[in-house]
Image (cartoon, rainbow, N blue to C red; front, side, top):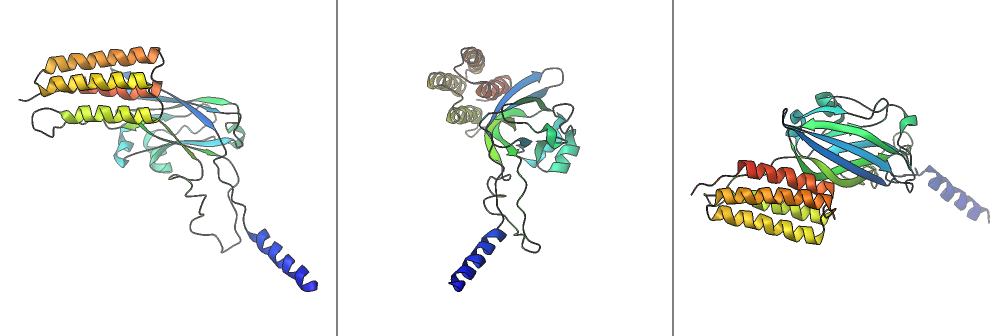
Length: 279
């Protein structure tokens, strides 16, 4: 009997020594984004508003936009956070300090975003175009602790829970490169139309475009593509203008979400304004 009791003691001791690893993803966040363009400065302004849904079990203490390319750092300016209590570190300092992303976080834990609350004022400016990409959020829970000398090089299921850490990843509008206007056949920039359809597909995958809107936008891109293939440059540009008007109408009718509008509208405008044909 004493052997059984001793064995139970040893087992309970072993389990007591194992750290409790709780990830920082017990949050449900709604991200709203607004993108505007200043024709004077030729800069896009990205503004984000976060809402922590009542189903969140942790306070939100970090919000980041991972950068797709290290070259983007030099093209991002005026990074600012919600005043007065969230990080407000401008441009290169923020990107250098916190790595290859645009970071925000509260200076003090009492300013964490609590379940049911909203927070706006996350913004930056850039020459880069609206694109689809990741947003990373992290709820707060004390990090796991280990006995001295027993800290593993990687806490599996925690640090590698997402590509960025133990939080949660959402799709939203981030910054990216403009459409390519190169040519694969030597006489017209078909890559631009391939690019527009690719972004349309990605927006559809996220549920940002209704089936009806998707089909109409796909067709209009095809009409503009057909015109340029046949040397009708001005007709192609007019068709792309029609596409821009259609995107505005669909946004008002809520047939596409703002995320899809920002991505498709500004990219369509860029293609229209830079379209070329060389027979």
